[in-house]
Image 1 (cartoon, rainbow, N blue to C red):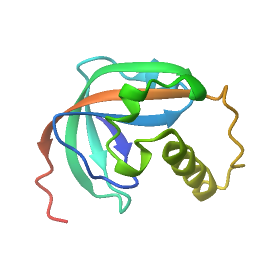
Image 2: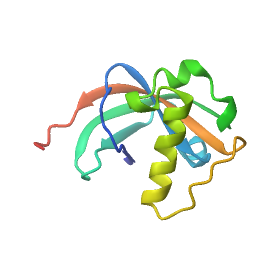
Image 3: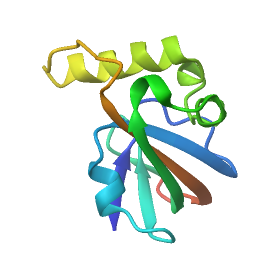
Length: 118
């Protein structure tokens, strides 16, 4: 089962969105496929099924997808940019983001919480 790490695993109810740089997940994740949601501490927090995805330029991401982001801090364009830059910095990558940078918005349906005690 694919694992999807979340820096701030909140907002995991119903349908939600996770936004990632690049299009790797678009190519690798099929609709209906279940993913394990992993917190920043590497512990499982729940499971979700892939419903759909959107791939495009960072500057063109629809506001309706931003509003569904699982992380409330990323529900505005400026908040998303700050979050993506923070993730790049943690990975030791350059934090420059062009408006034309490709992003993938994974639309997920929460299926169940993890049974592992945190």
